[in-house]
Image (cartoon, rainbow, N blue to C red; front, side):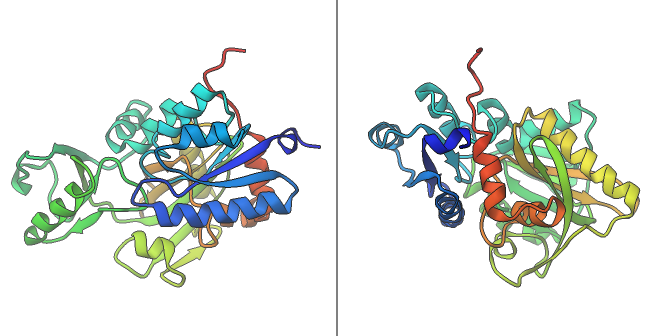
Amino acid sequence: MTAMKSKKIGVLMGGLSAEREVSLKSGAAVHQALLDRGYRATAIDVGRDLAAVLVQEQIEAAFIALHGRYGEDGCVQGLLELLEIPYTGSGVLASALAMHKLYSKQTFASSGILTAPFHHFRRGEQVRISELAFGLPLVVKPVQEGSSVGVSIVREEGQLEAALEEAFRHDSEILIEQYIKGQEVQVGILDDRPIGAIEIVPKNEFYDFEAKYTDGMAEHIFPARLDADLYRKAQQIGLAAHTALGCSGYSRVDLLVTDTGDCYVLEVNTLPGMTALSLLPEIAAKGAGLPFGTLVERIIESAALHTKAD
């Protein structure tokens, strides 16, 4: 028997973020996979009473299938550390860094990892394109959201106001980045090793929320259409980004790969989607020969606490 089969596992799903519906789908898929493999798993729709529910249900380990705020940003990880409940994925600091696009970009830059030039603004500060270090087109995004929520590409100056309004609707801080034209490539990390890179060709202007979670709105190409050396480079940079933030176990690293072979890191997803359309399960199946149930089992068996010294 594996270590976790003797424990009662809570699959944490839903939550309070803008990605709640996606999380419910991820959680349902994970919960069923655990049951199919003989684990004692129970689905928990996460609310503000989570601490009481975990104690009441006598949860002994947690598979975190949450996305976005209060789930992916270190909040739930901190609660689980206090309750001494081992959990999947990265610890408190790595989760918080990865979720905060400003601090993650600063961490990448200090580690020599290429990321798009950017400016940081808080609500109330005036944004003038003429004062930016780069011109149009540009990308406007909230500092702390996932799944491309609140992200806009601005190609004309008249589009900026609406893009700012949309980003500030989701956060009090935003980034304005230089638009980088390139292939959208995502690297899967499992057990702190790269397991493959997949290319995304969205039908929309970029890989937005609709393209991510609507069947048929994006083409997935595995392996990514890169020559052998560039494919290895993309995987190495994906692992470097995962490592720079101090991530643990598994993640999905989003890159833009240009015609000149530059690999720009967009972000590290410490709790990537686990739905039928999600990319990490697809990369795991095609790149490492791991069907969904095996991937879920590998992840739950790596559940741990990160602050215990022993």
